[in-house]
Length: 200
Image (cartoon, rainbow, N blue to C red; front, top):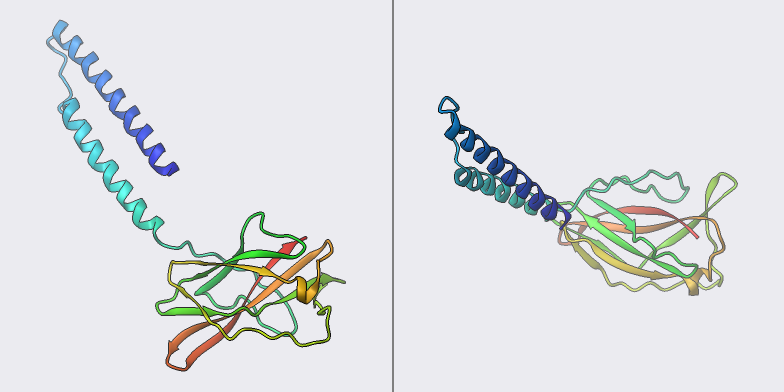
């Protein structure tokens, strides 16, 4: 939206400036016949400027329709290799983090489609290392088998509540890890792990 406002302001400024300069030169030409007018009339200038503006706006619309590729940070954790897949990324939505949960946005840039599930795990940064956070219960959690599809340039949002698994988190640095797979064909998929850091 901001792009179009700036575009309109520039259009008005350039059009107005050219018209002022043109008619100032025109008035001088009436007094002094040796002064030549600009070859481009204000009407022609406005038409050309409008066409350029429309082309620029259309280009921006096409670009804005594409999902921006988000670079992921590498983290050293024992159990998983994370953020080593260029065709997917995960970000934590602003102001969504609480002691009991957060909201994620998952992006996919591949040509097929990606899939993720409800599964996640959390690490806490202690003693200069990422340590897996223990569940508050000894029972192994049951994860739903539902796969959530994410298409190219159409990010999905997901809200996560970990209170039943970890309780409310105390203040500190944490890392949430989610599994992601790309669909290669019937029964074929590569599995990757995405990780994002957050602070409580």
